[in-house]
Image (tube, rainbow over all chains, first blue to last red; front, side, top):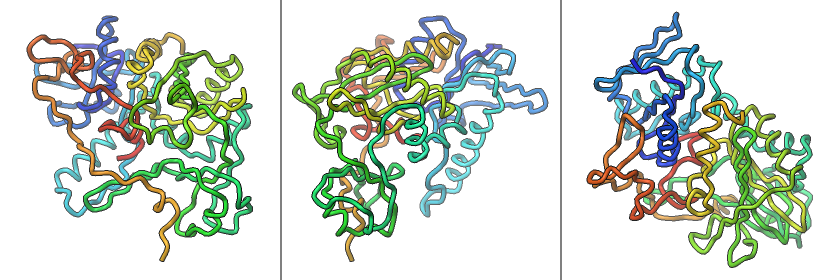
Length: 316
Length: 68
């Protein structure tokens, strides 16, 4: 029987998790990765009264118990956005709903460190909450209004950032669409159609350099996002190439505030977007499920070390 | 009727592939990562694999794993 100290809940094609498992293997850690898309390969036995979970995979048996499970790396959806799809076979509907509930129920292992606890992630994803917490901690934020009304008081000649309140990945027959952050003149906003759904409206900050901060516990990794040595106008994610991610050290107070923000939201990990403008750092948003693996090669940042340290109880 | 501002500004692209091509690799269940079938080298270190890129540019769903 293998005693599991670190549980990783992932998916076979989540290659980010590979970095973490490689490092845990190198450290001879007692860990188990389970993949959500292959639950049918496992035999699962949860003895509820003993709070003891046994997982069989082939000839291997793994035991998870509150006395020995130290950490959980949770890389799974917090909820299913679209449970009912007309063409989804009933078996798949059952598989998705029940296993999602099962892994959510694993939060009964509440003495373990969670990266991140799904309850905290669900709450932390509220962008209005994020901005208020950031402001209260001392991270400056752009002026922000959430509205569905053209009667919003804005300057028609000024530029604003318009974005969605929740990630808007939209299906359009044989295509897909995503709403990035858009730079829009106030006049266009005043004349647009808004009342169907709320938008986030923020002052446009310029000049700007986008900063990506990855926080795990007390460890902070920061990169400047540049194109040809300069800040990127608009949403940098729309550029597929020629973007450089340059590691640098944040000022101590900004770094400390980022750590405090993640903790205040009940998280262990956060991917924070900041804007640097004329020496000032503005908070834009935090993503509790933010990606980081691309920075391993693009910026030579071994973020998996920080994550593995945290999972092993170091720099918590 | 005019489209909502967010729909007007939405970036439209072909449906992304949801499953990467993994022929030549196998998943090492004991250790929890992909390796090449011939050498056992980890997939993420294999120079011929395109590697993870930032959100919305590839099939990774890390950014969207809040809901799927």
